[in-house]
Length: 102
Image 1: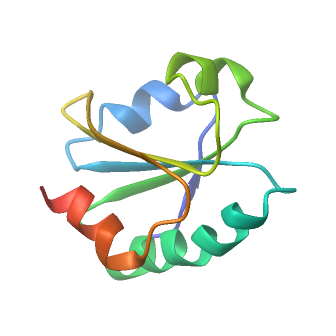
Image 2 (image 1 turned 180 degrees about the vertical axis):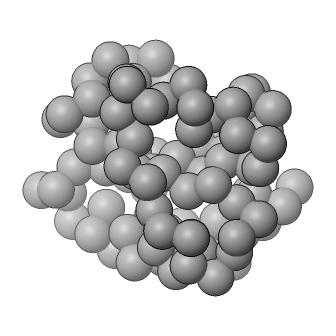
């Protein structure tokens, strides 16, 4: 499944998914975000049991503020509409998968 570009218009549909949700808060100018992005895309492509979305903090500042994002990349995992894990900075793929599975 492809990564979904999350906006305030589709946010509710994404976070209320029956599947665990991974949200990647990023910016196009952010170096560490560019390192995390391919991992997030791989997870989306390889794991249909997760919903994976990316949120550009420059285009969606309200969503970034809602999650208290002050540094990027920030990875947020949600289950049943609630945040279950949140990490800031580059994380290797196995760590991101552990966040989703725990």
